[in-house]
Length: 104
Image (tube, rainbow, N blue to C red; front, side, top):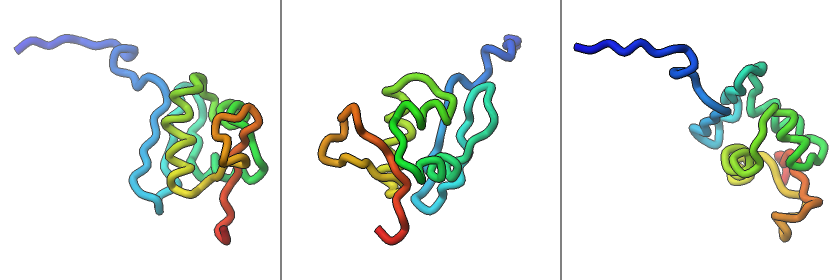
C-alpha cells in the first residue's frame, strides 16, 4: 500500500458547481469558491427585476461567461424559473433574464 499525501489545494473543489436534482428543488446550494453560499432561490429572487447576464454573474461572484450560461442560465430557463426578455433573440446584447411569475 502506498499513501500519497495531498495538499488542500490538490483536493479542493475548483470553480462553482450546481446540481439541479429536479424541477421542484430550487433551494440547491451553489458553491462559490471563497464566497458566501448563494441559493438558487436567491438568484431567482435577484431576477425579480430584469437583469442582464453580467449583473447575474456578478451577483453570483462568478467569471467565465460560457460556463456560467451552461451551468446556471440554461438550466433555470429549462426549469421555467426564469425567462428571457427577448426570447426570439437569445444572443442579443440587450438580453435580460427575469423571474418567471407563477401565473405565466
